[in-house]
View (cartoon, rainbow, N blue to C red):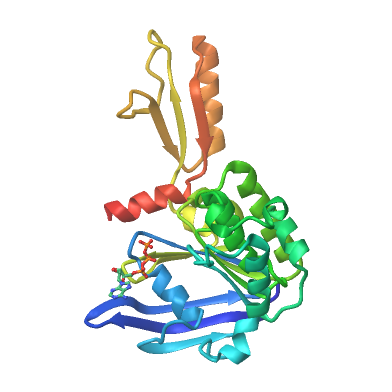
Length: 293
Ligand SMILES: Nc1ncnc2c1ncn2[C@@H]1O[C@H](COP(=O)(O)OP(=O)(O)OP(=O)(O)O)[C@@H](O)[C@H]1O
């Protein structure tokens, strides 16, 4: 990863009539980064992305992609691969024809067969789009992000509707794009995917950033958790609170020590800890804390 800026958004404001959907948002993405733009429903993610992609005009502020105004399609468009939530391919085209169409529109060199292989649709090459399953359609949408290895890739909810094998294959293909130097901007409601993969996360709420940084930076301010349950006759464990589901919860900033003490207590009392889970704060917990703020 280098410090070359690929996306530079400064004090972006976007209004729909009287409604102020994005408020003074600044965001910079560097070459080679995987940046996850996350947020609550209606936070302004799509509005922000559509402005960065050149589909919307900012009410005020500046947006630069590779140093250009993204509405300058000639300068920018061939360098972008955009996987929308719904690509809207013609239902009468075959898969192969659709991929060729993507290639023609992208103006990037590649081979249709290679792209079909990456998105695992070689066996469906001659099938009409109207006859694809939901997951297969999603993999065809992904071809827009893969064709010709774009320098900047937008993935909008890429794994929605995909089974676990297809998800793994998609993330393998994204890893490959990154090895070849692509920069990735991801939106997803599967927070564990962002937690595992994002170099940085921007967490939006009501038009502005609630928090921005690495996952470690975002989760640092909240305690880690240990969750477990106990067999009926077990004594009450020290330091643990009761959860509404009858299990136990320990919140701690010293996870390793607390876990060590708990295991020692269980050993000393001859108690088996059931459903034991211990780990750092997750992005889910931060999302819940926004809802409660
Ligand atoms: N064309 C439009 N006209 C008026 N209001 C709009 C328009 N598009 C979006 N909005 C409003 O702007 C706000 C931000 O919408 P946006 O789609 O950017 O949010 P989002 O973060 O992508 O949400 P979600 O996670 O629910 O998809 C919402 O309150 C939405 O109702």
